[in-house]
Length: 107
Image (cartoon, rainbow, N blue to C red):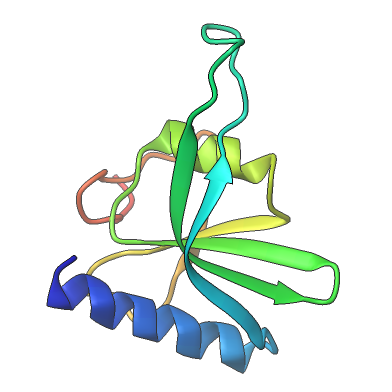
């Protein structure tokens, strides 16, 4: 990945630590859930950062991401966050949001 992407990952890790998430992993692979269009789908998602605090588990995508991926991650994590390029704070993903798939900013 790019240097900017790595910088965002470092910001995300710092943000997680500030919020008492000390069990942090990078580049976590998870199975994507099946969808009505692809009930036998067995794909994998790569998540930039995963943080755990007790039973709470959150995913953070750095930069842009596809809304379908973020929506599917909502079913696997307590919270999903997006850290847009150029920002110092993430935004919490909610189903139905529109973000730029390249930079992560809301549109």
